[in-house]
Length: 220
Figure (cartoon, rainbow, N blue to C red):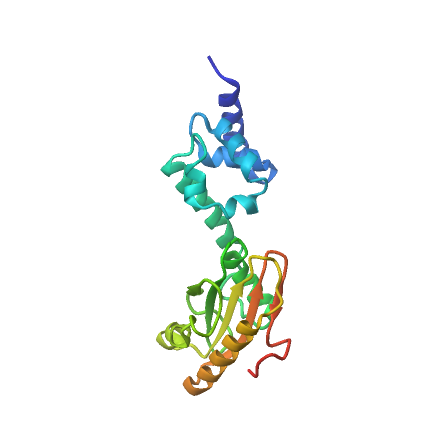
């Protein structure tokens, strides 16, 4: 006998195959899960994570606490969210010339985080990204914990001409703190000694960004 939840699952799979853009959030989650009781599990997930952004921030341990979500299902959900973030990032062949363009590259790596993560973008002489963004640190940003040598390690290894750095503010507030400014100045001074220019430090939140260079808070 075909159950209502099985019909929902089969319908979600069909719609995801034929026109995923027309699927609801619940249909997409049901299709991603793919197990026989996917529709019921998806309902439980959506009761806790009201938006795809919320689901993207869910830790594995949180997902595993939901009835019907095992290690494989949790891994599939996390992988789908990560693929979505990476597909939203601009292509690396595009030059990064403005803070808005840097924020667009960094947002998929930072906006969903519940801690402050610090990333480095290594650029060539044409301001194109060399390799993937590099995670250097996570936790509260201050000069005692962020090692400037780690910031430039990949830039030197990749023979980069310059770097852009960025970190996220999970609170949603983009205003730079005194520690943000101090870290930026320390990185800029080290870059001048290493002949690798610090082009900007961009603070990213879910809703916006702030450029310390545009604020005049360090000399590039």
